[in-house]
Image (cartoon, rainbow, N blue to C red; front, side):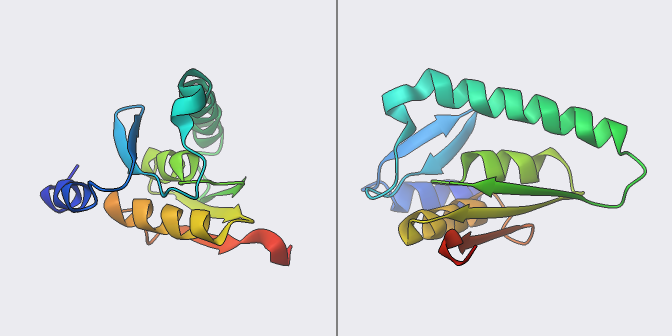
Length: 124
């Protein structure tokens, strides 16, 4: 994590935070917090990353890898996916506008805001 990202986390200390697979995330009060089922959240992230890594190996010749997450919450899976490879382009959606904003802030925190598009999915 960059020094700027650490500073942002400290400035946001009044917001709940969590760490998933070694990455720190801000969690807005209106967004589901994984601490209620932390083991499941960690497991889901690990398993999805295994699938993504396998897909990236199988499609190594392709220029990009597109990923859609429905129900992104604070963006844990979307951000881990974007960090997995520069080839990844991620769409993260949620019906909760606060979750969409939470994902955007966490994407900035981890330097992947250029590869993640987070949107309200009530339009789909």
